[in-house]
Image 1 (cartoon, rainbow, N blue to C red):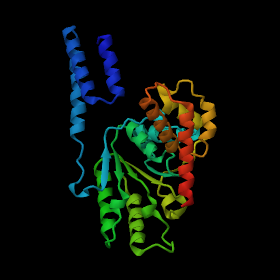
Image 2: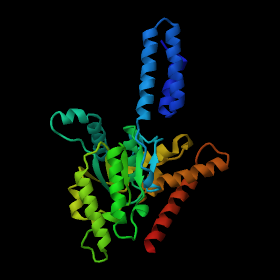
Image 3: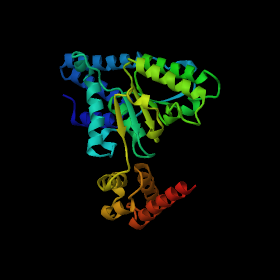
Length: 322
């Protein structure tokens, strides 16, 4: 069998998503097994490696005329453990993953897995991270549709771009994120609406209704009250996010501080962080860690972190007052 060192480094490269190193180590294991008198095991390992390379080579490239409309991320390191939300929210994301992984079993009974999700909630509360986690857990690329590039002032151009995106969704399996979705999903009878946006929304409704691809489609919005009611029934699940509660703030602070935590009293900081989003808390912790690094300290100063959290509150209130 493989040596203890080889197994250790194999596991390490897997969790660090270092595919090149993982493949090299796997080939070394195959060679080791061949020398140890286990030729069949060596052949099986090489076949698995070759199959993985073939599968990767079969990936359909993005259409050239998509231009800079979609940003594709293959190196996704976010996992379910990184997503700090309530237990019920965690379960709903797990259910999406479970159904995707066992979709063949569902199809045998005439059922379809969840693959069209609408994520609603204030900025910085985990909607984009959830999309990244889903893609990372399922080993799929995260394809973010840039709404500012999608929506144009020219008649019919936005709808044409939208059809091109859905053609790609059908051609190439991935997790497709329509962030700031209210740019095209706003109610069709709004006073400030224009005819072109109504046509774009109608196109989206038709395209998502007809879509039967193997991709996951995720729309995220900070303003779900603005969305057209016809949209909600087109999605398999609507998940609403909120600001972190006390338990989530404690977990988030501990997770982000990591080895820099030292003797910081998390319980005291939880109260200071009340009212901040997940992203704001994470940024405050990062600022405190940078301060510690520049000061030559291996741990964060609780007073500095408190000040950083307070600064985030002040920035938030300044933004609300504008």
